[in-house]
Length: 601
Image 1 (cartoon, rainbow, N blue to C red):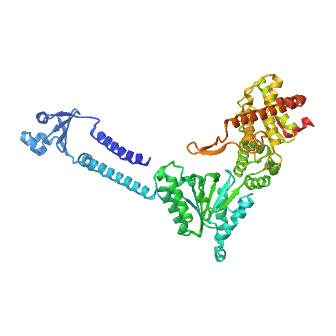
Image 2: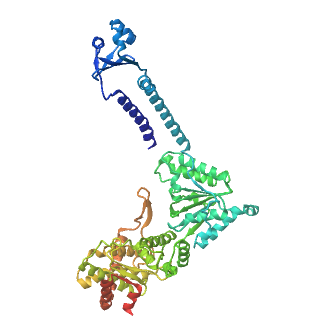
Image 3: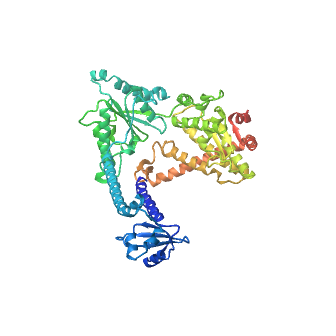
């Protein structure tokens, strides 16, 4: 954009000057050109009223007002010209004679500009090219410099551990790093060496970056932040140069913290052969390894990194002396979720009816970032409705939006489709209610959200890390409850169970191949996860025989058939309760947990 602008300006100036020249040379009343003989004869016959001499031109104004133009020789004056033609001096005295000189602009436009303009354009072009070459050289010199952003401890947006809710164990682990940065002398006197690298491991949104900034804020030291992808370029050696420049800057500001986000972008296992012997990513990783634990000590520079893929990192990164301390950040439990919600709600006007504990109960599996997004969506919804406070209804609606997607109000079902959807969702809800090991039903709706025509939401009452085989088997029956309800009531099935069948098949396959819960196949897993480097995803490599594959298929089919039979028996036995659910759905379109439980009371 800057280059185009520099080219357009000289062209615009040139065209403007050309227009001025054209306007200067165009006359609104162009006089008639005559020869000298006619000019002399008109003076002799006393037809001329006034004469104006302008260099080599003589402008005539006749008595009748006609304008004429005569060209004379440059060396002769008007007096000499008339004398040579023997014009009577008495007749010349009757004529008004005026001699006009050239104006400054006329001299400039006619005599100077035609020579000066090309010279100015050439000089401007040379200057423009010189600036471009200098800019390219400057960029080339800065290409290998680190692009890390430095956050000084005296900034107003300083973050401490008080701003990070939950993750108590992680904060306790990192407190040692903070104490070392504050009081390094007592550790060095004891011969202790603080870990040079701290690797933060956790799901996306669990607060790895926020926790790293909190460490810098608590220690009150400079904080250099950079993404792993910013090291890697298409030119070999640039990433290693940026690593060297980053650590050089850090040593000048020691004690300090270097934070590398998305470490797996540059720290993946070497030797994949993708880039040959000059793989830029591997060269960058080698430089990071040397800077972290080479011959030159970096006592007061602590490297923190974050990743959600520790399994793909190179083993040299994880050895003692480099990232020798690993801090795992789990998804928050119910108490942590409540604390996180309290932190994020400080800047939002909540109504008195809002119960953050209940919100925490309804958001199992939510990360810290998702909880922030939840309250933000609720605030947007409240502002959209011109409310002064965020209500509980706004938060509950935002939970549905995040989990299931926004309401599709334009997706209107006809009466028959609405009735089929009501029986489908009632089948899911009824089976979930009657089985002992399933989560409670929180909401049933036939309002379309996302890609689903309706939904049945089940949420656990507490956080669980372990799940039993009975829970999985009953979950399969819940998945198939909608399909079986359609078959029993309408003696026909629709495409509405497509997603349910996919989830049931996926869960049955995991029960057999990953959890070792099949009596026929025994206590082993099937399929080894491998990463497809070129595709950027994992797949299960086949490590079993064709005979075992047949048994796996038969076991998956058996589990699904048994689950379908369970769902069918429940729907047939409690058909009256299902009809009550359908009637309420057709009337209200959405049933909350209180109304749902009242049906069975």
